[in-house]
Length: 547
Image (cartoon, rainbow, N blue to C red; front, side, top):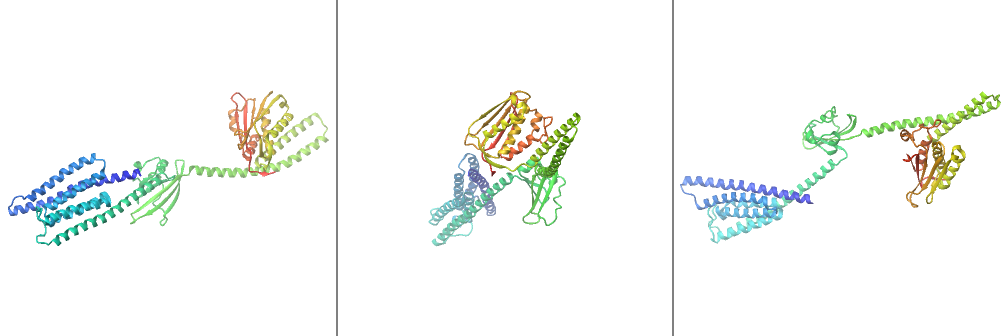
């Protein structure tokens, strides 16, 4: 609203300036020409300057002085609207003086009233035009009445003589003028009001359109019929690294070298391009818009940077290829597992029938050990490639973790020298898959045990980080081992990366996939005082099939 009021103030100021300039020019031309005619007449007749001519000279001088005063006051006066009313009212007085000096009812300069009414309607609107028309009617009516009753006598006579006309003729002249004054005021006011409304609407529409274009997420460039740049929005400027002042009226090929917009197929209003430039890929849509004649044609270019999108498409293609390779690898691993079982059985039978020499026994142990390792690796790979279906139940996480700790302590020799500290906080009942949770905490606790070379401490802390009413529980496992190297921390979840001499490198990758499939998250970090910390966050309730 404030911008609209400022716009109106600016329009009034502009109109007042035009009014002041037009006043000087018009009065100078009209009265100047009139005086020139009279001077020539004087020369021909040999008479001197009459009183009415002096009066007219005085009006010209007065208008010039008054214009200088208006120009000075224009910079001082704050209320421009009242200032405009004042100028127009004085103009009506001046026109009345002109009419008086040129014959009164006989003066042809009464037409100047119409000009001032039109000026008032344009500057001040319909209401201002009616007010000035009323003032013109009053002053002109008074002038004619005073002339009719011979109270005043006009200084000059111009045009046809009204001497001898009846009272009805004078009354008719007054009524015609007053009716015309109000009619002109009404019509001009209506046109002015519509014009102002149209201008305001066009400005608002232009501002709205410019805001849309400037804030669009697409780059937009407007070209003339010669494919020269007329306009560019903020996004386009950002994408090409240039502003409008740098590229105004330049050929579009200065921005996109090699692009051939001119030779588009005739009859196609739209054309799409995929433009490669300086490691960037732009998708460009060119649309032609016609208005008026053939030369009234502009082209609008919409474009955006699709470099990242194309990169993602390429990555997706790679992922699809890797997925196919993974599926194929899983099938191969599945096919390998059955022969491994058969080989293991055959080796066992051969071992029972052998002579049991020390060399043979040693070889059999190596074979069995490697077979077990291969079977474990194949099983881990199959689990990683084809995760099990989640079958959720109501699980007491405290009991489950305590059971896994007990299993680890009984199965790992060095676990007997490690102190396990278990802490819990609040209720730890969740809805999840107990088998997969057992596998998760088994792998994590075994890793913690293997990370401690001798005696040490493993702390297991189970809690509700957001209180009893929270949506998640956390299990934090900390050990007093040496922690992870920077390289290990970056590659912990990468398949087949391992820091163990005989590790498969799939354990933590499987754990991460399993935790995420249960709707949780896994975080591994070093403890500043030494050791490592693994934090497992699990939802209390997940969207799983009930077991």
